[in-house]
Image 1 (cartoon, rainbow, N blue to C red):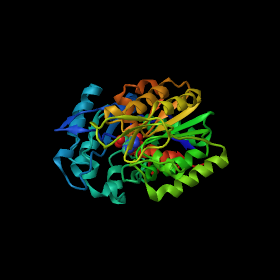
Image 2 (spheres, protein in one colour):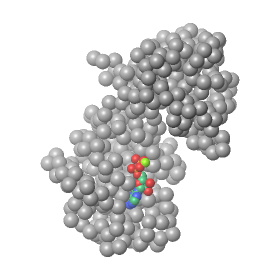
Image 3 (tube, protein in one colour):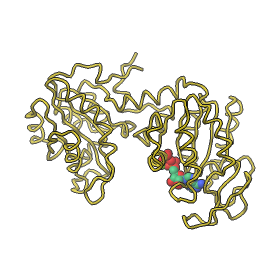
Image 4 (cartoon, rainbow, N blue to C red):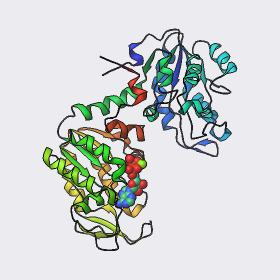
Amino acid sequence: MGLRTIRDIDLKGKAILLRADFNVPLKEGVITDDTRIRAVLPTIQFILDQEGTSLILMSHLGRPKGERKPEFSLMPVSERLSELLGRKVAMAPDCIGDEVKRKAEGLGAGEVLLLENLRFHNGETKNDPGFAKNLAELGDFYVNDAFGTAHRAHASTEGVSHYLPSAAGFLIEKEVKFFAPLLEDPAQPFVAVIGGAKVSSKIGVLESLLKQCKTLIIGGGMSYTFLKTKGHSIGNSLCEDEYLETAGSLLDKAAEKGVEILLPVDHVVADEFCESSEALLINSSDIPPGKIGMDIGPKTVELIQSRIAEAKSLIWNGPMGVFEFDPFAKGTIQVAEMVAACQGVTVVGGGDSVAAVNKFNLASKIDHVSTGGGASLEFLEGKALPGIVVLQDQE
Ligand code: ADP
Ligand code: MG
């Protein structure tokens, strides 16, 4: 699997069309978190450091659904990017059209143009070939560094690659570098810690991880479906009854393969699903009638501690409890701390898990915190990501 990266290519004198993920959170037109912009800076800087290059940036923002809506303008991104780069980032009036083309063609060496929101046009998400071709006409070379949308075959992530030579930026390179070995030949023991709300959204990930992992730790809302299928009582905890059978067969498969499965052996429960509900410790795998499982308990934390500490490679996806509510965040905090302390290669993926790691200020102690929620899950499921496939040389 040879990923072509900007390192392998002579970019000198070229106009580079770079797909980035500038889908940042905005509040009343102000960027509240610029992590995604900062994540692409090394790629932007590298491109601009090559002799005679100009740069045309493109991204989507939110879901304007094919309509030009001012609240989804990328203007705030062009301003923040100008500050971060210390050079002017001009804002284009649209992402295609004659005026945009003139602006792109008029760029001198070292100049940067940001195209307006790609999703102001339906052609983007429809992967319309005409729209993709219009984008391709703006540059000489296509670089994709938007890992967060790499699982979507859109015009700017997939279509455009049919009209221009292409390569991956450093962010996609890094994501692939950390995720690919987990599916192929992870350093053993490979431990997977999977939580979050639903079995249904993670079953593909669980099945895929069973192939390589030595220990699979299941926590969070999805653990109750597994406990129930094993005959435990789960009170009023979250459960997907239509997945009881699937959960059961996953446990059977794990037993056949000799993969150790660890489920919660104690719980923090509540009477109601709300932050103000009193947290009560249940020192058993079974949850009494009427109670809702909200977090893993201290015995469970202790049980999984040695596995996490011994891991040579580790993936964590999905919180261990309702960490958004302080009284039920402890299990997730402790797992985050154990992952941070693990000496092996540690990877965290998934929107909420990454939010948890950031909330607890542990990101710098983890080897790789993925920038793509949905994309990282599909990668772990072993699916080919359309935005990455087109950047690979087929052997
Ligand atoms: P990720 O985005 O990291 O992949 P998910 O989206 O699968 O994670 O799950 C995150 C959600 O799971 C959080 O909103 C969290 O509150 C919820 N969750 C965790 N444990 C429980 C639980 N015991 N009951 C209900 N919801 C839970
Ligand atoms: Mg989520």
